[in-house]
Image (cartoon, rainbow over all chains, first blue to last red; front, side, top):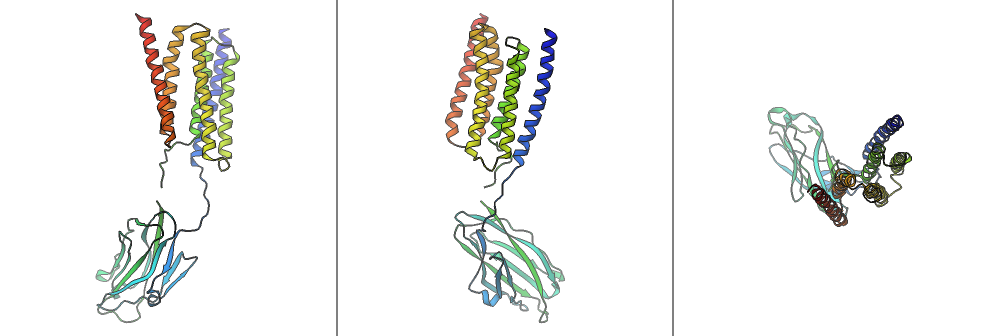
Length: 180
Length: 154
């Protein structure tokens, strides 16, 4: 009788270990499961009033833009007040930040090139070129875009006093979006 | 809004229920006051819970969170009901009062508290009322068991 009970206990223990281990594994994999659905983007670029001066071209369903006519003059700050805007077309606030992606061009001809998102809390990427080499900024903090609002990205440039005409700097930045 | 990775899934209640059934199966086997088939029945209930968990994972996108929560909670409630049932069976049907009290203090009360604790972690305002009632039930059970043990000791 005691032997049968021991045998039962061993069998039950083995089944128990199997069931609990398998359940834990399934629960763990369940925690790793996520369903992702594609959706239209709420945050995108729109042209500002100064878009023609700055040569703004928006494409890829308003998710990419180029500004090809920006000028930097020697010893003079050139400000483009409202060439392009970031719009939050959704019904909830979104957080965005500016992130530097790539930079090329001879730094000796430039003093600075700044991009500032004019949200209630400003986010700026300031590229400076002291001593002939670029000082690349770090990614900004997230700032909030209210629902249904759009904010300008102000661009400021200045070339070195000795800069010759026709020198080019190419900067790529990204606007990262985080839903609140 | 970003959510914590430690947030409980509804299936956690299923997992907890499986553990309760497994524990019950081993306890009923060790105690020896039950028919031989009883521990195996509880083991079968645990396996059923595992199948349920697996189905839940496979049909995650089909079932809504409310439905998942409902059947997981139902399963856990069944496990708890069985624990209480065993307790009552020992104390009332078998008239083993001491064993019933020990079972209440060492199994029924802790499992109810564990259930109430994890239930309270699950988000949502309507659950606060239920959690409060479960906690209240667990405390009454614990205090009652303590008084019974004390009275017996005098």
